Length: 226
Ligand SMILES: Nc1ncnc2c1ncn2[C@@H]1O[C@H](COP(=O)(O)OP(=O)(O)OP(=O)(O)O)[C@@H](O)[C@H]1O
Ligand SMILES: [Mg+2]
Image (tube, rainbow, N blue to C red):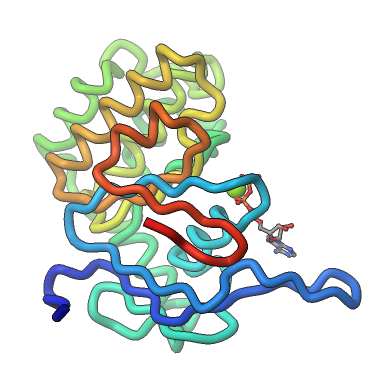
């Protein structure tokens, strides 16, 4: 089957990655082939310790692959220098972590504005829409550490999507939330990513959350099964 390269956000070809622990080598990814297309929403599942976060870290450039090819937005990324990776992350990537990772001295508005400032972008109607849809209007001036878990995760989503990134990586974004708040966050994440035409790769342990995505990848023993 031929791949339309203009539709590909990221492609991994025969990617392997492992870690050395003492004198033991532990293979985490074993000749993995993957393609993320524009607009895909993918749930990544698999037992704890199999390498789901490692895969996200590879696509975000926080970890380097041992062998294989990593293509991002039409470029071969395994040769990129640190400054190229920083540009890619700042402009093209949104990241939502399980632990929120918000900037705690700042209030909600300043957290959301942060990626805009880094990219020298202006506040736009899209930013207002995010704040409205994520029900953050009332809490904009509150320090983020005074918010509930669900509220903090909604701020994290706004911050990850405010610059309309090509790709959103989410690592168990509802792991710290109760079921109702988790489902609300999933609903909003999907709706907003679709509105921004952002591709989503999300790690989750929850079947309910995985069902919000269109595709599902399961990682086990270094291999990915769709
Ligand atoms: N920087 C590192 N140095 C050494 N080993 C690492 C490093 N990062 C990950 N590992 C190891 O790689 C394996 C995969 O870790 P990873 O965090 O990717 O798993 P995971 O699937 O995200 O697990 P969980 O569901 O518990 O979050 C683990 O055995 C982990 O100890
Ligand atoms: Mg993990």
